[in-house]
Image 1 (tube, rainbow, N blue to C red):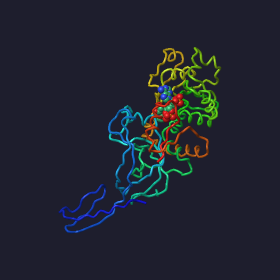
Image 2: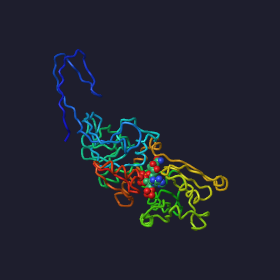
Image 3: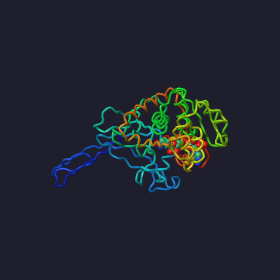
Image 4: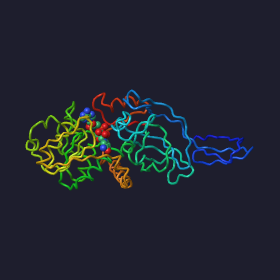
Length: 373
Ligand SMILES: NC(=O)c1ccc[n+]([C@@H]2O[C@H](COP(=O)([O-])OP(=O)(O)OC[C@H]3O[C@@H](n4cnc5c(N)ncnc54)[C@H](OP(=O)(O)O)[C@@H]3O)[C@@H](O)[C@H]2O)c1
């Protein structure tokens, strides 16, 4: 259990008290006092000292034990994914990012290892996720205030609990926040193989909403289409299949989608726009191709399309944080019941750098990399 460190203080000092973190320790001349501080175990962490290429700058280091203060919780991490935004934070191109030296990672799931003396309602063995997510989840033990931990049921598979906060929550919010969708409506999206994309397909299907999905041309595209259809996709196209002037006439798509999602940019974003009906909205939430979104003048004039953006981090810092927690709990139930699934590969923490290479796309397309501790 908790590492206990006995600290003996021999007062030779003339001051009446001193502060150790948040504790005020009284001192008297020639008075010897012993107190115990609850300490975390030493942790292994992925750290980076400056912004730049993650594969060059990240290293696994040991972090010494830290004191668990009265209102703090020490969590033994169980699993944490490598998301594109984690990569962007290390690169230094994400708008909100920790100042290096920093520990990587943003979401994950862990088990409470020990709690400070003032913590109520959380006990060793409970499962928690950081919510709102906070920096530094690629670390075997984390000590943070109780308020950042959200207790969850332990009946969800660990890798789903570790990944619920960023991508499934994004999919869920985006289906809710832009256009009122009713059963029988349709949406269109690119990047359908992404974790967000897979969630959009399934959450849309649960609502009775059709999904039209665009994937990039790549080896195994037929198998990918089949897998997405099994998840609940209504249509799946590669970009090259859609290289025709009038996409909708050729395919006879009905109903026409009022809402589209773009996480790729470039040609893949243009294709989403082509599918949208007059007055439709495209929400951009990612830019995986690093190419800009280009919109034809006629799309604006004759189709009156709207272009919007979504950023989960901004959303979670609003007064809707409680609503987000409820949404997460509902998503966890869907995951537990097998109604929300996506591809993941579990990788032991010590193999972080091979998982990172896969997440960076250096080894072609791979499932979401989830580190296990
Ligand atoms: N705005 C927000 O709040 C928010 C929240 C969550 C996620 N996101 C963004 O959503 C996107 C998807 O995230 P995720 O974690 O779900 O993704 P993921 O599971 O890690 O999958 C990566 C996706 O990107 C595609 N991709 C990779 N490199 C590409 C390239 N050069 N050109 C085109 N497509 C490429 C992959 O296609 P293949 O399968 O063909 O390799 C795959 O669909 C990311 O841009 C992420 O930053 C944004």
